[in-house]
Length: 168
Image 1 (cartoon, helix red, strand yellow):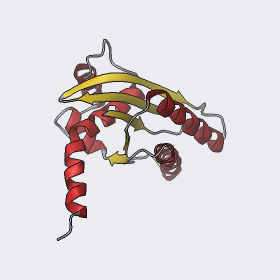
Image 2 (tube, one colour):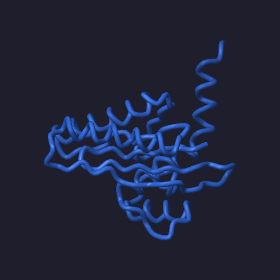
Image 3 (cartoon, helix red, strand yellow):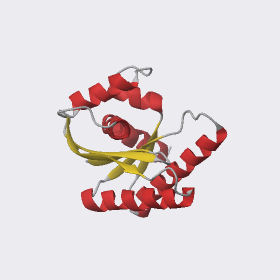
């Protein structure tokens, strides 16, 4: 299963692709979509949408995993982050991919085993789990962590979905 993880942001959106092969994870690609903080929000959202569409077209993931909003410095920041998340969700749905959302606590627990792990711990575990030569850029590392979280959670997600749709 090829997973596209996304760490949304209006100025920088991280993406990371991993492939789950049995119990092994393989790094495919990662990067950051920089939108230029001075451009109008609508233009930045358009850039995020187009670039994520290009990543999806180039790597053909089977599923998208995205981090949920958990903290913002102020209401305007939260609103902009929400717009970026919406565009990322739309990019996945537009390409007819299933989209899963994870909280920061779920991501940290899946990657490090501790829900209050720090950024440096997460980045180092992502590097180790994917056998990367160096720590990825922060936003890309966060996106890879979301993809890893989904890789570890995919079986559980399927069982829950089946249980919810089963007839009593």
